[in-house]
Length: 360
Image 1 (cartoon, rainbow, N blue to C red):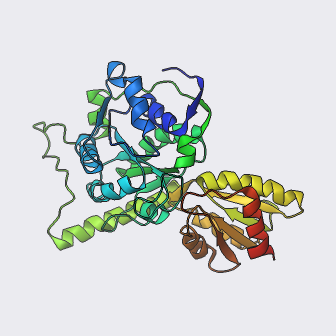
Image 2: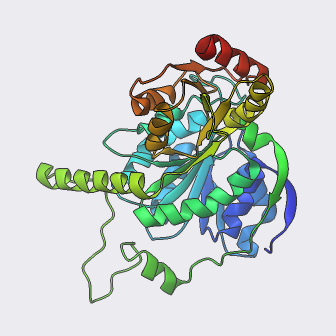
Image 3: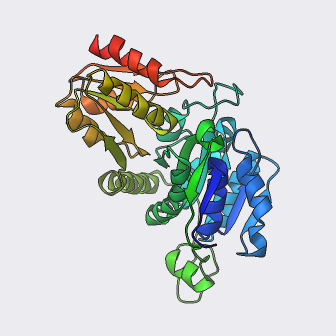
């Protein structure tokens, strides 16, 4: 698979990037609006070219536990779903984090709660960044805002997953998953050989040689003192993420009086809202968190020290705004604007909200 410029959907980009990044296995279950991930993988038939396994499991519960089993051997194993499906995977995700097993998961968010609607939303922020399942654990969460980033972030996600031995969540929504844009593909990264896999994942359950103890993959520890030590190890890992792997984008913030804080589809809308605002003489910038965990706390705090106000734009009732307010330490007015239930706000609505809530 050589470099090409192709027109593709975001969901197709995820699938093609999985093949190109040397993924060993994908186990999933169809759910709108991300079903094209599996459909694309089935159409591409990577098992005939790279040897990648693609399997439709009988449920989301089955798929995440297949990920657990495959990834425990040190192989690159992935899955994808949409909001209710990710909820069903929550127990498996906390087991993966508790067993320190790297994997990649994509969530194309849809409106909720419950089955809700199949239209796009951003109301899974809490679920994604505050755990979602039980226990003191975190996922590394990346939020693409274009088809190109959907593709590129798969490669980045594998690097992060194995750097920290941690699940990585690519958190997108139905709009980006379904929209069609040009995308530059990459040269194919060969799947690891058996020797490479054993070198990169010495912790994996790939067989016990005579010169080392058993590798045991589990999230169970009945000794409370040892579990506390392990939990502290996880917290140290998350602290390292915050120091080394925070990602963000800042647009027009150098001279801004006001700031939009938005990710994913909402950030794309805010880029147009910025343009409209500046045409009216309002100096507005955009802070786009690319990693939702770890969150760009330092960047929010720095902006809060020199601008007049911030508007958090989310396709939800307001979730990320809590992290923005904590980072800003209430130094300036911070308000939320969002549509939910599957409705996408317009740039004009966002600008009007800024004027009414912050500029006044």
